[in-house]
Image 1 (cartoon, rainbow, N blue to C red):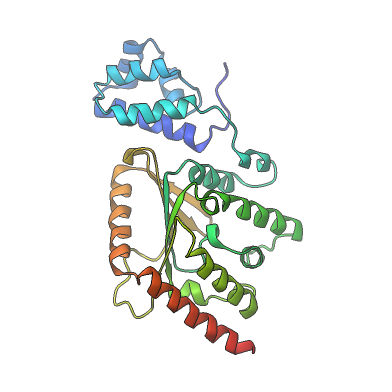
Image 2 (spheres, rainbow, N blue to C red; image 1 turned 45 degrees about the vertical axis):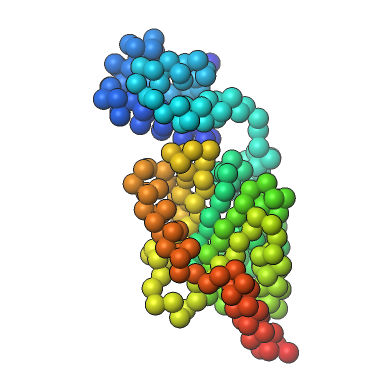
Length: 287
């Protein structure tokens, strides 16, 4: 079977974990190849996600690397066994890979935690608010492109609105006041946010300006928890697109940031009251 031209983010992650497993065992690619009957080129392609392996091969590699982390190996076996296509594949020809990979990571997360400083988390945006966020991009998007991106974002929300995946959000006051689409759109978004905060499995916590310190450096972050901690993923939104991090050091750093947010943000009830107060201010501006 020829190498995959465009491996998915989960296929690449499987390869990354296999490389880490090999490196922790102190083996080179050629050494591992000899131990499991693969050529050095096949090892390289496997670790880049360009070729797949069987569950039996995975367990052979784990044994050759003296990997005793059974939960991790079982989780990697689940990735290998999952051959179904996600709903996001229908958008592959119309959206960039960033969009698809975000949906893929979210869809397989056990729990999602989000910290935002500039806008309401995408998983909780209304259609009008999401459309306004895409409208402000430069260079400008066409109406069709805006509508497709908005529809995609709304479809992503099903994993949390259905209760399948729990969601914790920490929203800075700045994000609550940014008027994408104007005051009416924002007021409607804040009302929807209050309603969402009462749904089972969705937690909305506010970080007000008055807080004397803000954990982290202010990026919009998503922490997607995998089947085991080793398979957690951090997503960072930047102007050029989306970045993903999965090194043990990056994961440890972001866990600390979210722990600090959890200990400093307003309570859920206090956050709802805070959002209501901002909504009243906004409504007063156009009453």
